[in-house]
Image (cartoon, rainbow, N blue to C red; front, side, top):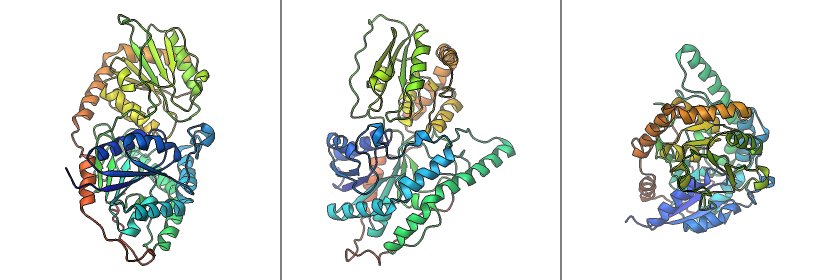
Length: 446
């Protein structure tokens, strides 16, 4: 048993980023550590169930409920991925930087935390830990998305480049992507000056300013590169079900031999009702059993079921996937990982965020097919039949799932955090931090 430590998690309720974060929190609590969550009010119950304290963001952006009306950033209304990144970083990450930093710093001091653990996509919170000299970790709850040589640019769903033209394509789009990220940098530097910290060159230097960055996926699934910074480590996926997930009891007889299809889209709102209705229609014309899980963002009445398709608010995906022959999904990272670990092939219908890039990795590894969410019912039905009938897709999913489950190429994230806590830190002599200037430990390889 390691020495008990205090970990402050700075996080936000983005849907799929929540279950892996709380899975990590539970593991720390089980090892005798104390954890406090600084996060949206909607995370209070998750914190309690994980054995952690909870404090809500006040001035920093946050959800008041999981209703679409309370969405802080409506990315589903922006179809251009570079515009989406730019507006997200300006509105959610950059402009509120002073609030992210101030609230994180106050909580670090009042609770006397030993380590700050931040969601990688709240990089301003790391400034608070840097100002206090506190060890800092960041976790990336999905694939590695910061622009990196050798990895296709984020948002476009590309596979690794081939040949000179492909490499030029990636260089051009990576340049455009970096420019989109830069809308937050002036806000970061304004806050850094307030705390006597040196200016940063760009967004990436701030995001990489953690002592350790933990990517919660497998290097066998992700596209990797030697240019990934030295402080970034793959740790494998954390696949705990969401706290709101309900037990599953199927309505079918035990002897029903029809293939089981799980349909699982985002737990947050992405205007997904229309594509879910087309999926139900496609499945209704096939000799299968199907379960559609809606999540908390959709009203059950928005997606009617049929004779062979059951629509529920939630059900344990891990339970259903043990029997499933196919997963039809938006390709959120957590859903995708659960499907692959179970060896289940996929029909991918990405709707934004990291989903198109996650789907690209599924297709690249031969574990499924990708379609547009605007695909017709007829094409959906044909694709579902093809993936169900061809053994190569199941074989690809099984091979990839076994590689992910092996944990090869990954470090233990809990042990890494405990080692970081053991390094210790020095607190400033006074509550005025303007004279404290810790160096930014960020490589320049990106």
